[in-house]
Amino acid sequence: MREITIPISDDDIRSLKVGEPVLLSGIMVTGRDAAHKWMMETFIKKTREPQGEDLAVYDELKKLLNGAVIYHCGPVVSGLDTKNYKFVAAGPTTSIREEPYQAAVMKHFNVKGVIGKGGMGAKTLQGCAETPGVYFHAIGGAASYIAQQVVRVLGVYKLDFGVPEAMWVIEVKDFPVVVTMDSHGGSQHVVVDDNSRKALDELLAQPY
Amino acid sequence: MRDLTNEILELIRRTSSSLPPDVEKKLRESVERETPGSAARGALETILKNVELSRAQSTPICQDTGTPIFYVHYPEGWSTRKLKEQIRAAMVEATKKSYMRPNAVDSIYDKNSGNNLGGEDFPSVHFEEVDADEPLVIELMLKGGGCENVGAQYSLPDNRLGAGRDLAGVRKVVLDAVQKAQGQGCAPGVLGVSIGGDRGSAYIKSKEVLFSEMGTRNTDPKLAELEERLTHEANTLGIGPMGFGGQTTVLDTKITGMHRLPASYFVSVSYMCWAYRRRKMTVTGVDVVYE
Ligand code: SF4
Image (cartoon, rainbow over all chains, first blue to last red; front, side, top):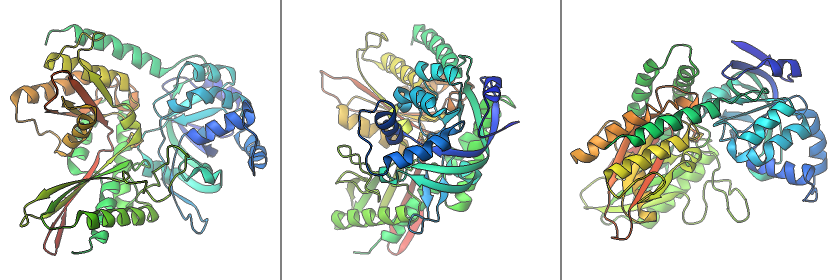
């Protein structure tokens, strides 16, 4: 299986095609609903004033996300009292909820890959072509298995969003994913949706 | 009255970390149907590795430990208020032990309570009284959020789908729900379907049917036939595990009928992801048995 190391080069991104299984290694950042909304409003659209540590966190995120990967994940984390954090369960969450934000976040921070489940829409596909970047589909629910591939938790930002919504900086080794949206406009999700719709129409036309 | 907080904590641990045997068996059968080397087969294989790992380590099968839904069948004379307190105390402890992720978010202020308690409704607890000489039975289901989001309720007739107020119409809307869900509910899933009721009671019923064992059929032959037909037809849609394409989209279908008002005809579909976590404990005297 192909192995890719983060940060990912544009050449590597362009060489990835829909359907390809990949093992990812390197440093990535988790982020889901609250994080995307916060990045969008505070730093991209600037409709919300930065508060507290926001600007300091922004500087760190700019470095961390450059050429890297965002993982749509709300983990179960142990060691919250001691800050000796360990990922206990860390499967992907549904990505489509970040559709309003994802392309803008990819472009703003030069994010090369988005990991999640369920795929994303036309806006993100466009974002993948322009950044360029890809969407990696992880195995939904495979939380213990993926947590085992998280070798280290390097830190956490925006813990005030709650444990699942916070932005965790993690180092992974051999994280299994499948490319389901590439930087050439290809989307496995569009293909499966179209084919299943045709199959449904045929079923609906049959008598009971 | 006996304090069962620790026993309920054990029920939560088992539910969150150990997939029921009937579900695991179905998943193992499904692997064989997918082409070797395909993304669909790879997904199912990873799922099974994950099931083994989480059981061995007592870690959550999925990080979304879901909405905790308890059904308590309590013998006459037990205090439901105390049972509820014990369930809530066990929930807090289970969160500390990372069997559960903090999963209760205040919708108005966007704050996570941090301990899986949220108002009166989280966790969700249903009580049903049984005779005083019957055992106490507590059932727990952890219902994931991603799959909950792809659940659907149809008010028949549905003109877009040409679905009328009969089982033919039910079939159409359920297949439509599966197609719309794609892989988003962590397919392969299990369908809980209620026909009738009102919007609220119907959705509750569509989850209650998911407590029964996989592969058991409704005693009404008409519904039993529709259950099997829907599972079979859903699997011809080609959505497959995770929506990667493939043969396994739905593992099983459970249907139940309810009375309705003459004016309404709801079909409510609860989609349960492959991480179909449900467990049961039975308390007879001092004995506690977990299934
Ligand atoms: S839908 Fe189920 S398996 Fe998927 S992330 Fe949610 S709880 Fe986990």
